[in-house]
Image (cartoon, rainbow over all chains, first blue to last red):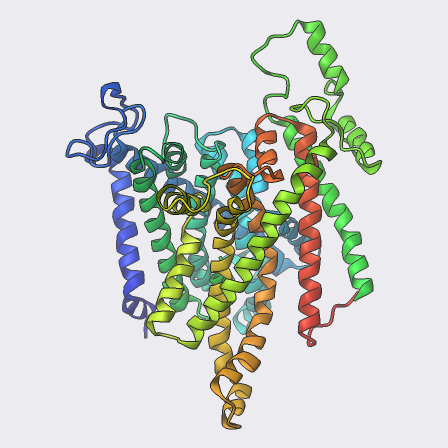
Length: 279
Length: 306
């Protein structure tokens, strides 16, 4: 059965995919579908509970929470996707080189992988954030600096197997050099596991960004991401629970959707992968 | 196994050195310094302060001096808490963090394995679906939201446990559950997958055909063999407990080293950041070694070669 048909049977994964498309569209078109801007302050209407005018209420500066959640989605999803792409490119390149070339290339890359694998990536990210500054690019680099490791491990393991397969040997026998073999012959056959790991990476990046923002090392105000919103909401949680409930719920549902989608894709595209279970 | 451990510990030294160097240089190169407060010092005073803390020297010389002090067992004094040695700050804060971490690990293992095992045993029933929803929500909920939900329900609404602070036995409950939530989910998911795989093994069929009762098969054969891969999870879990503790300690006001770490990075308290990073490095290396040794011990097929 083709992969798409099998995937369609998994209701939860399909619903998740639809939800994720929807929320991404809402994030992209945030300026069109919101009445207020994310930084428009209205001091007379601070901390209002949800009403017809403000669907999700207003925050302590009188800003429309609905707008801030949508603009926050923009930031969070963009960070998640860009970091995943960054680590996809870096991790795939390094992993493929290490796996195919072996020898000291492999040694060098894998020692780097070991280092980042033992130590909590957020520990590095916190230190890197100081260095790179609290901007969009800074966050992506700080998270990407360690996120490539998972990808590199995965690709290396796959390349090690593929290296011994007949079609690669045939290409080598025909005199094709290493770089074209990696890019034209090996990597195109690995798209399944790569897509799966990409789907699994996005939510963990979104989570990592929201962690940094929550402890006050992420994006700077007035920009909002789901993490900064949760941070603001957490402080006011006693008296104004709507400030944490709305961004929190949407973040939770998005994470849930990514995880269900990832599980569904893994069952279809990469059925032997066990490691994805833990991430 | 003894030679293996010694070798692993020997490799740990350059790893720690690399970690320390990386952190040290990144911190020094990052914009902003520890004494960049609101007060503008006269240039002479500024120069004197920098001189006292050797901050006027080139970074690599600062690093070698610092390393020399560390080898002699001196982690220097904190910038932020003037006059307090970093070693003292860490030894005051470490017990709380270790207690929190080990209790969370115990809770996560005990409930994660139970949850995963029950789910696998009752595969595709409502029990399985509920257990797996709990597990996937543990992976999807950021730690601070777990904390928020727990505080909202158990402190503000039911008033069972205090929402923060660290002064009575009850105050440890919510931080431990928060910290354990994510590892619990990871363990439950892997246990379930492994058990379902083991259920189809030949020796399980043999056990059933010998007439063993279902519970005996599940506990003696399936569970025992499924737990071996779960042990490998303990490495990533220790790492996740460390990061989790940053947040849990901030949110619940636990006087542990995670809270110090974040605060010290923000305040550019170089000696404290370096001290805490080293402690984390040592703890993580020891935990990973322990995981490998336990793994080899429970699974005789694995031979650790020196």
